[in-house]
Length: 229
View 1 (cartoon, rainbow, N blue to C red):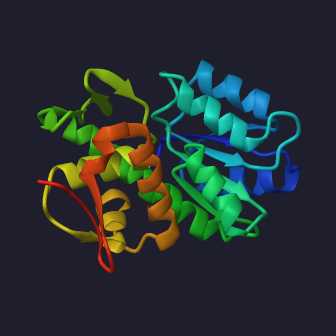
View 2: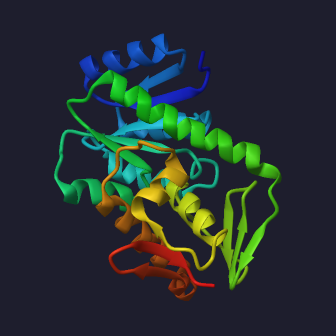
């Protein structure tokens, strides 16, 4: 049985109970808060293995919470799955740009939610197992897998869970071209439901954060992406 901790930040009491019940049945330890402020405090006080974060929250909304989590060293590595009643692409893209690693739209199936959580946590555990992997240097970029740390010219670059996974995967295979689907499989595991647009958004964000070093991430028209040799 799973014993990872999941922090649920959701103001709708019915949805709170639905998530809490299903996660508890699956063996997760669950903490529930009803506001962005309380969720942020809970994450900082006792960092969970994963956060389920609603976008539409009273006071501090989910997007701002996500941004603040990504800005703090103790919470930036926590995977975040955003819950939203809005299915429009613009809202999903905004969430990803703010640092979310995945999203799921309401109404959702508890089985789908549990599957998404399992995949993200499995990837996180695999990264922990790879903690002994040697640091990688590609051009001006230094990648430390164990610390999940990236530096460019010695300066720390803050990346989300998914951004780090994409960069690490492509940097380990310079010159090789991968489709969006192959990148998703490498970072999240096979059969992970995600749109091509989501990967494109992650790549834009990666290039922006890496600055001039981001030029090494090439778009291969009609195919996908690669890291320059």
